[in-house]
Length: 297
Image (cartoon, rainbow, N blue to C red; front, side):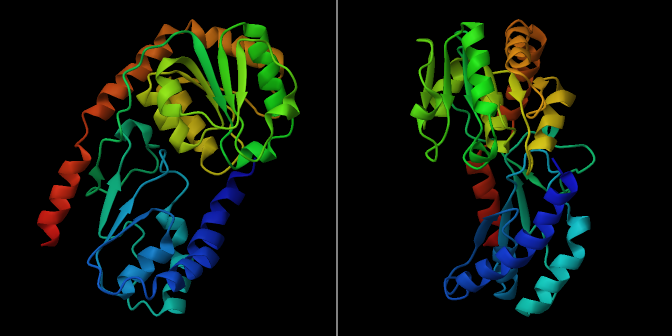
């Protein structure tokens, strides 16, 4: 895992090539609109909105805040501004920056701007753990993870706990052969349904799975491989929400031991419950919408 490379991708791709494509696609679409809402790596949409003199709401999608670093993006955004003819510097936080994560989830070295609008995410179902385990490696890194699924499945077989493994649409469950009756391998599962019942969620460290695990009340085991995942793993360790394993060196035995250890870790479950409660105290989306409407009238 090369963190410097991941940060460079944000500069060279998201604030560079992808931004030019996005801005060009939006040229005709913005006519007649009063507001643009986009995520925090859609610099093309931010730039296009600024050029069209339309207010833009930027929504955070990186839980830790550590992957998108405005201080590193100054040169790339200056180049983008010149290429697109934006008359002033591109504002990476837009006119309004909405953060649908609780403040403790964010890396303290990369705080949100002082005027950020913190917003409650979808609460989902109340936690009701039943001793089951949910495992996934997402929809991008699942196909780049070598034999990690095999090691995870071997570990789950050893624990004896009921488990479901979501492998994504690009992989065939038959590839992994037969499994014990308590272990299901599926291309897709509804995480909003299964995670609130899970006692452990094992995943790659994407911000979405991190947040859904917290809202489902489940301690986490993170095997980070790239993108924002190492920063998510840091948050899991820092807050005390679970464990972090090396996806290359973790053996099936190590994964199984870690699952067993975390199933018995009441402190991690308590920390997760605390973070869930603080997240639910954030302003509801309707409150944020009402605020934006009042400011933009």
